[in-house]
Structures are given as C-alpha cells and as structure tokens.
Image (cartoon, rainbow, N blue to C red):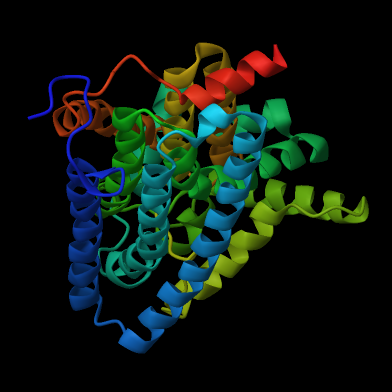
Length: 360
C-alpha cells in the first residue's frame, strides 16, 4: 500500500484507481437520474438523443477552450504540466457530466415538474412582504430602477451562464489538488439533483413574474410587470435590449406548449442561479480570499437580479445558497475519504501559484 502522501497505484498511466471509481460514481449517478426522469416523463428517446448530442458538442468545444488555456499556461510555466494525464482524464469526465446534466434536468423541469403544480408561491410572496413590510422587488427597483441599472443586472444574470457551465471543465485541468477538484465537480453534479430536482419538486413555485399567470391576480405583481415592460420600452428607445425580459415571454410560451427544450421550464424555489453563483464564490474563497470577494459580490448581484426581474422571491436565493453550502461541506468529507493521502492544504494548482508569481 502507498503510504500517506504517496500516489496510489495507477490504473492507466498516471490515472489513479480513486479517479476512475469516483468518476464512475458521478457519471453512474447521473445516468440513474436520467433513466428515472425518462421513465417518469415518457420523453421521446429520439428528442432526448438530439439534446444530448447538442450538449455533447457544446461540452466538446468548451473543453477545447479549457485545453487551450491550459496549454498556454504550460508554455508559460513547465510546472503546469504536472499530472497532465489526470487533468485530461477529469476534463473528459467533466465533459460527459455537462453533456448529460442539462438534457436530464430539462426532462424534470419541463416534463415532470409541471405535473406537481405551483404550491408555494403565496407563502413565499407573503414571507417577503412580512419581512420587509413591502415586496422586496420594490426595494430592488428603488436602487436599480433605471435602464442602466436594469442592464447591469441583466448582464450579471446572463453572465452567470459561462461561469456555471465552465466550472467543472476549468476545475478539471487547472486544479491539481485531488480533493478540491473532486469536491467541486461532485458538488456541481449533485446540486442539480438535490437542489434543482428534489428542492424544486418540494418547493414547487413559479416566481413573481408568473404569479398572475398561474396563481391568482395580485396587484403588486401586476405593477412589477408594468414596470418591467416600461423599462424594456425605455431601453428599446435607447437602442438597447434587456434579454432577461425577452426570455420571460419565450419561457412562458415553451411552458404552455409542454415542449422539451433544455433551457426552458419554470421553477423559482430554490434558485439554481444563486446556488451556482454561490458555488463559484465558495470555490474562489477556497483558492484565495482575495479572489472570493469579487465572486461573492457577483453572487449577490445575481441574487438581486433574480428579485429585480421577478424570476424569484426574496427567499429563493438564500435557500439555494444554503443548500449549496451543505452539499459543498459534505463533498469535502467525501473527497477526503476518496483521497486520504492527498495534501488537503493545497487549495490551488501549483501551476496557478507560479503564474501568480509571474504576474506579481
């Protein structure tokens, strides 16, 4: 047996048995989840195959970009070549995970969740008003109610996408800390099942922007929709577009058509936008607190944007962030058991450490 600190026997090249087992467990969990969603939703397998194929292409090109970034780092610093075979193994695993996650989650959100109905909207709306004495969206509009403010929040809401999608791919090649890499990829994967699916099913809700459509008429949320429409008109007159508002109408059309198209579906609580932004911030803090501060600010901005545009109730964001923190904490223990001989204190790849020295 390898003593603590030594590498365990390799399976192929420098790839460890622990790598293969943990990667197989994550992919196997996703496949089990996908089979369950397919059985419940009765999705057409041909359409599922098309969506998996589309995301396979997106994951492939994203992996190419991550590989190019890693290659550039290797040119700058030869120390970055350490454990390259294991990095690319995990990059392939991350590509498989991102390929499968979104078509499988879309089956739940678009075909399964609608059978549940929206049960919690009135409670969440009442809680926010009780907490602040008014609707939280009004407070957000008091601070960011101009076209410029709306465009900033819209940018933050949309800029979330590349961070969310790229996190497992970037972690695979740029991190050489076994525990941290597994912790990130495992947390990312499990969160779609635990937060997005289980949490989304239990706390089934549509959100303020769809309250009057699915729940009942609410004068306060009708006012929200009028304000958002007015901001969109003002932005249009200035030659701009607020994409988040345009997406709301498209999302409603897709939902009413009962269409299976990844990126659709309506689910407010818990907020996966805030949960994923919080995960990025937690990873950044794990690497360096100075890196964590701007990403924490970004997570808060994403949360504000979800309230401002009426995607989510005030409570949806904190619940999503707390659930993500719970998974993140549990994943730390799991990663320590999978890699008992790894150096837990190394939070960032030695290559990135050296690159930081080059910049300093």
